[in-house]
Image (cartoon, rainbow, N blue to C red; front, side, top):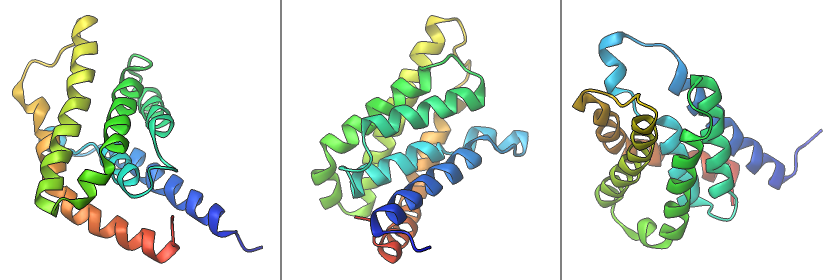
Length: 163
C-alpha cells in the first residue's frame, strides 16, 4: 500500500517530532545536561517556518504536553511555552524565512529563550526555579545548532515533498 503525498508529509512531520522527543529525554552525561538543546522547540520552530499551515499553535501545544508527560512536570507548563513559541514562529514566518541563517539563528535563540522564560516563570510560581545561569545554555546551544538542523530538515522536507 502506497501512502498519499499528504499522508507522507504528515508522517514525516510526526517522525521528526518523535525523534526530537526521544532526543529531549534520552539520558546523557551529567556534565552535558546544561548543554542539551531543546530539540522539540527547534523542530517546532522549523516546521512552523517551513509549513505554517500544517504546524502551528495546536502542534506546539501537543508537543509541549508530550514533554510534560515525559518529564513528569507540571501539566501544561511546556505546552503553554511551546504554543507561544509556535504562535510567534507562525506569526513572523515570512520575515524569519527571509533572514540569512545567522539572523535566523539569533531569532531562534530569542524564541527558545522565550520558551525557557515561560517555563522558569511557571516553575518559580510553584517554587521550583533553577538556581544557576546554566539553565540558559541550552538556548545558546540551540542557536548554534540551528543552521545545520535547518539544512538537514530542509533536505528531508524536499526529499519527501512536504508542503
